[in-house]
Image (cartoon, rainbow, N blue to C red; front, side, top):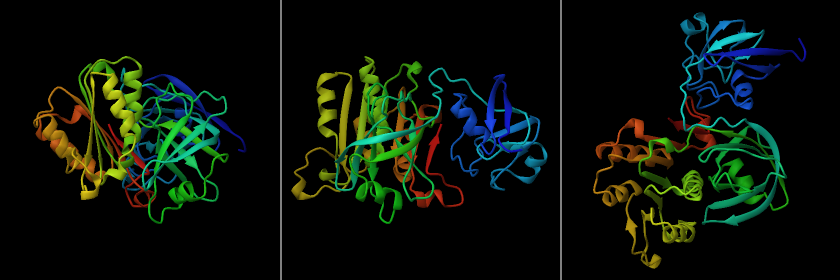
Length: 355
């Protein structure tokens, strides 16, 4: 039926959302400010699995590995792929988290107002929302739609939610069409369409414990947003930021964090170079970023919350180091940066969050 709108009731919340023809249940819920657990948004990971209690749905392109045949027979579905064919009631595994904010997903068009070289292969791009209030939680990301390029590209927001402009950091990926466009074609005055906010990478402020942020390369974006948000709200808990890059020219926003450290006694900034050269004149921390964290805390991380953002190898090494230092799964939160090539694999997504 052309233009049909179906109502989906989400249990145990008891909330109902309208779903347009062709729209997925997950998309409709997120746009209505109703959170359903999800990660890949491509039918690959099974995080958004729900039970259809009443009504009919089209299961879409759910992977047979993420949604097994027997699960389909039992009325299970992936919310990121499922489209209702009638009014539907679903049951979802929803945990209420006092620190999570459910910001409705919006589609907006922005103006590019500034592009800056942050390092040899990372650009900062600032976007004006043109009067649209874009509410998000520090640590979340947006999906960009780029002219002439199929699919969307995910980028974490690097500005504090209280700031007027949206800021993203883009590392040039060799052969990457999306990052190539943003580095080589995009110019000030252009327009960019985006949707968001997405993601469940956020600060667990209610824990009221010291925080460790470990970032690798352009993975600095989310921690930058989080640190600025915390300090801007007057947080007085100890906050330590480790930023790992290869060489000194790769280090960016160092002056900002040094200034923040001078102004806030509870904030410590530790830049780390993995491959310093004689010409760098570097006297700071060297080696891998997780190794610097181990040295800084004498190998003991118990009593902290840790937030990790960067490439998968850095994330994995940091998790091992933190757990060896008596920090366990419930206190480690990650955001892993993957490229479009990773997303095209059998079990990857543009951006995945480990809760």
